[in-house]
Length: 116
Figure 1: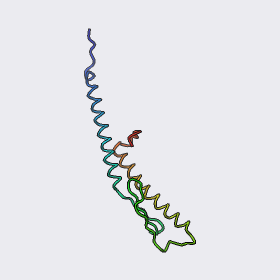
Figure 2: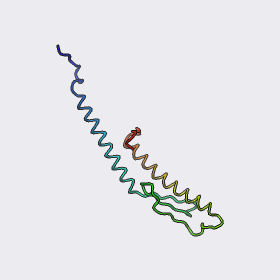
Figure 3: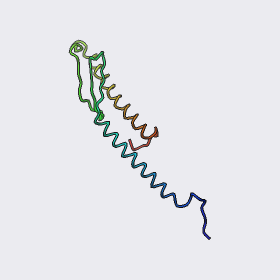
């Protein structure tokens, strides 16, 4: 005697699994595309009333540092170092925030370990 499954339960498991795999593959492709787009972007930050400006890429690499001559004081190198550090950190924070927002939008806020 053959067992009968209720309607809607028979044979569709494989189709659901394939659909889930396709959806995961598409999400991974979208993540790769977004990552590539973000790596091409540049993020800038200025501090100290525009005394120091820094631009970083989406790869978190410093592309440029601009320092106004009037903030270069040989007697206060520490202040200049602090301004540069603050500008770099802010530019990196902007890049990371955009990446987090774009990935959260793609995954609906679900963290998927190993994908990003």
